[in-house]
Image (cartoon, rainbow, N blue to C red; front, top):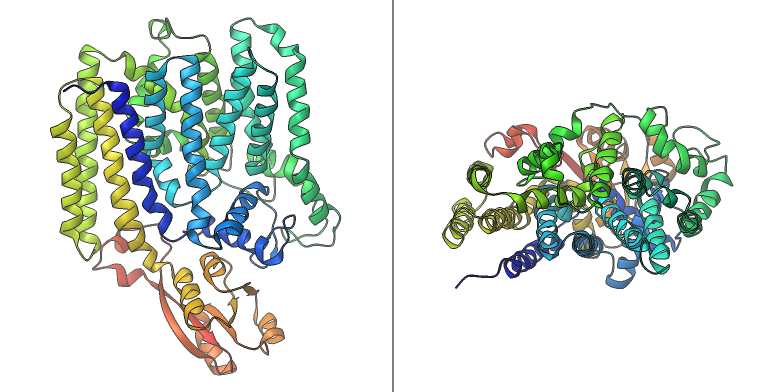
Length: 546
């Protein structure tokens, strides 16, 4: 019996959502995820929602909303990795729903379902479900704002309010630059379609005013933590303005590379990042973009398509020209990428359909082969079980969905992502997290020495220890800090191996437990191969001072 294509797409979306659930029940990864989790934990411990603390000091980088969301979840569910990951998971689903609503409003249900399916099955969305950062929140809030402002063209004023609220939420996650993907598409759309009156329509200026109103909690928090206290040392200097950092340094300072946080830009960075981050759809997406330059491929498309293309193009260009670039930034325009890819897929026929049928099948086979090879060499306890599951996913996709047709391409690609989720969430990520020593040290301390007063010595990236250890973790940046605090009862210090000899000799330190460590977000061939892994492992220790 033939399954209606829209029902199939809905079924695959549900399957993708269900396959994401195991990610909620594993650990929080360093560096960013564990840092954000530890800072949200500090909000609860200090009962202070306006001052942010990280690494034992005042923290100024991202705005507050990411931490507020996590802290609310901690209030409801308790401080745990599940409580930290759950909001991101739910906001990811909300983003898919808003993508569906936007695409259905501009096009039709089929394009909307395919767009949502592509979004949920893209590799970087999958990995972000496990390694929680701020970008999922930004993506959803930005997309929700675009949707409501799109509706505000023809419908109730409350869409202006909702669009402004979500735009403000996006700002409270990352900063004011998020207004570019929100408004750039509309402005270019109005210019191309000669809707010049929209540029002076009062409702858009009311929207900007509402955005300013909605971000006032952030402005108050920054002013009271930093501008009222110029004596605080931030970025190794005093007199730092939180408001100036929010409006300028954190955004334009990074773009021009003249702020306190600098990077090294590469104009091609996001071109090759998208190639892997948007798998298994990236080749289709790049082909879709090239085809947009041909007039015949733009015929019969809704004029609002300009809004989608322009939003993606302007944001991508700004990211590429920026000197501060990280792979997860690109997530913010994955919804636009998904719509562009869905529109191209829908028009595939004849030779083009057959070509991408072959390409997507090759991607499926190559990814399964790569994961099977990794399963064999990594040293899992049951490598053949993992390989068997991957082969079952491959066989299911090829036996259930047959024929050179659109539904086959989409279903097989989605099932590849489901297989990838099972591999990552059930086997791979839990395996590499065994080498995130801070998490295991914190959990060991919680279980075996719950009255301990945890601290870190001469190491600033102990974010997972900070999150998982009981209570608040102190940071000792030198031995002078340790000397001032060594009399604290039940003081237990988390230290790298380089400090162990001096602690034993001069402080009579007792080693409570040792832990293997590797920087698991920067994987290498030597680490992935079980035979060479011991060569690249470092060691951390929990020690008690007597």
